[in-house]
Image 1 (cartoon, rainbow, N blue to C red):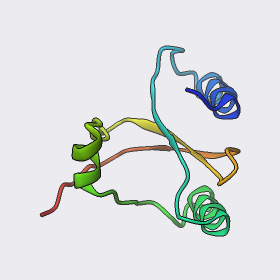
Image 2 (cartoon, rainbow, N blue to C red; image 1 turned 60 degrees about the vertical axis):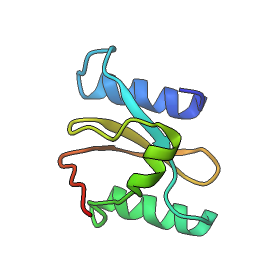
Image 3 (tube, helix red, strand yellow; image 1 turned 45 degrees about the horizontal axis):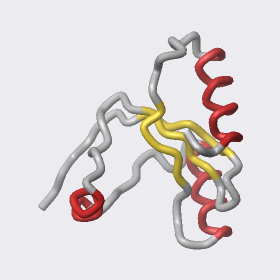
Length: 96
């Protein structure tokens, strides 16, 4: 994990949740395309109002990136790299 703030946030989460230190964080990312949108969407995640997200399958294919996995964790950051929340994938659906 390159983002040091996210790394510290992740370690704190593992400790608070009594998870093994070997538990992997799949991704660190911000939602949206502007600082304002990224902050608003992260706040909606924290409040529990935003409980789903979407990605473009083609982007994963082009980047040769692994698809998210059920049970996988991600750190949500704001536009400036500050950690805002941790999410866990509970369901993955690929649609045409």
